[in-house]
Every structure is written in structure tokens, then in C-alpha cells.
Length: 258
Image 1 (cartoon, rainbow, N blue to C red):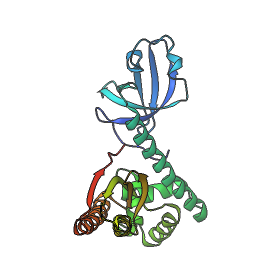
Image 2 (cartoon, helix red, strand yellow):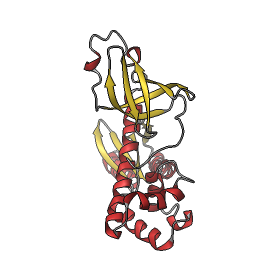
Image 3 (cartoon, rainbow, N blue to C red):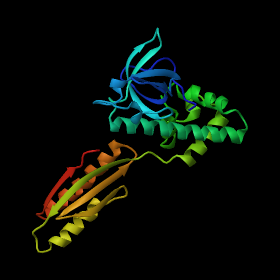
Image 4 (cartoon, rainbow, N blue to C red):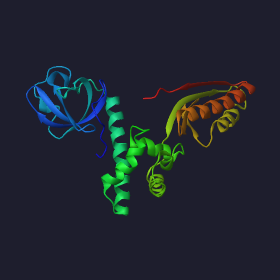
């Protein structure tokens, strides 16, 4: 990775590491984002008794760890592998993948311009990192029009070229909200009433599919949760008002994000 953070990580920070050495009761790993080395005691590798530490880690393996304690004078960093849950691991790994994707874009532009990758990375990164922690976060804001490289201080011609390629290579970020809509009508024309209600629920960013027993899956996709919630609220409100007018029964429950 081209991306490097200065100084030391914070306590409890999640860090991507590469295992460099495995001993009987400890593991040493390089913190990829900081270019520093940390140590994992065997008790922090996995809960329970460990018969063979190499069943869990080997040299070269990428792992996500939590920072436990730092001694800046000795440059000693204590890490834990077992205190990182699957959700945290996925989130951190995805974060790094997105950053690597952003770096690949920089590498491609550098090749086209016939200039050194690190030189180009620094030209852009020095401006971006004044406001953003990661390059990919800036790129995501660019494609939704929230910021611009020129606005951040990058030279105009370079900013335009990078922006054009970023928009070609990265899809706009999207969030998804799911829920279950239940519709019941005892009217002789109940089937038609429910069908009409469902038409009011469906929209450009919202899909409705039959689930069974009067239940329907509702899926909303939008650039952010605020917009997704607004779309969902308007849709359910239309359905509710229509069903109440037709003396029908309507209920909705949102599914928890996993």
C-alpha cells in the first residue's frame, strides 16, 4: 500500500497487519498502515487453550487486530487478534480493499502521464489527507458531487484528469433498507385493492416482491440512509392512506441491518 499513517495508532484502533514471525507464545506482525511492528501474546490470539499457535497464524498472513497498549518510548505495540469480531474484521478489510482500489486508479493515471506513482500520489494525497482519512472516501464524495479535487487544492489540469477516471472506475456508493409490508383486505374486491396499494409502494428506488401470506418484501436503494429513509417513509405513507381509505389493514416492520 502507498497509504501510510504518521505516528502511532490509537488505543482500541483496528489495524490491518501482516504476520512476520510466529514463536511459541507470541506473534509479531507489521502494521501495514503505520509501517510499525506489534506483538500478539498467545493469550490474545484466540479464546481458549491453543495447542498449536500456527493453526491460527502463519508468516505472511493478513490479519485484523485491535490495539491494546502502546509504549511510544520503546515503540512497543501490544495487539489482540481474538478481540476483533467478524463484523469489525469485514469492515476493516473492506476499507483497505477500497483504499487499494483508489491507489490502483492513481497508479493507472501515473502510467498514462509517465510520472512516478509516489510523486503523483503525494501531489493528490497531500491535499486530500488534510480533510479525509482515506483517499477512497474523497473519491466517493467526488462521484456524488460532494467535493472536488480542485476545491481541495489539487492543480486544475490534474484534478480534471483524475476526476474523469474516478467517475469511470467507481460506482456511486449505495445503501439498502429492507422491510416487510403486510396488506389485508376483506373487501370483495380485496385482491384488486391490494394490487393497487402495491403499485403505490413501487418507485424508482424501491422494489416490492411477494413473500407469502399477505407479506411483501420492500427494498429501498439510495445513495445514503437519510434519502433511503425518506423514500421508504413516503412509500409506506401512500400505501397506508390508500388502504385505510379502502378499509384495509396495513402494517410494516423494518428488518434489522446485519
